[in-house]
Image 1: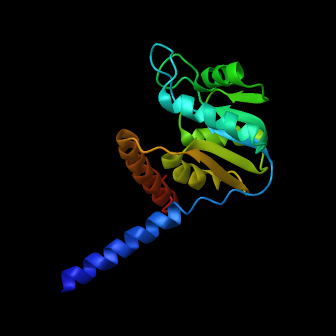
Image 2: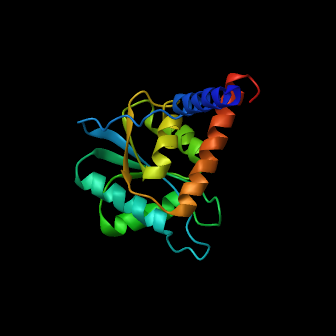
Image 3: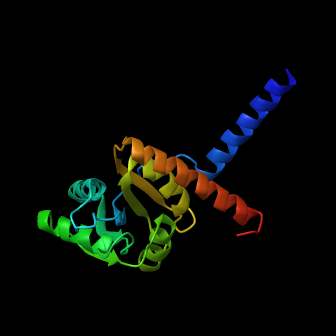
Length: 184
């Protein structure tokens, strides 16, 4: 009985920690955002576009055509190979649609996507463009850099993406707990 109670309390604490650090995604405002931030992801080693890159680019085109934002900021450096994520994604988008694009080319992870892009955009309303699995953690990171943000996503249910995102959320929460304890 005592063990069951302990497990219930532990589970409640873990769920509370999870929702504290990864709150719900703010709802999409009925406004036009000055900027949308398209989060990068790596190209294949031969330079061809990865499926996630294509889906994110198509999402940016769709959001622009729906008049959801004015200027697209694409963030991502050459992380896995020599191909700079933001530049490759900008090329793909410009082949299909004409829109104002700013490339941030130094970011190596989601945190740096926001850190570097916020220097470009400042603290103005921003629309985050990414896959549905990545959006919750992305919005949790965004709150450090933006006071008004939301996410526009495409459905992403690939098993390897789910596993990667579980690990990434765990690491994110661990880092945030270490920050709160003054150890990071």
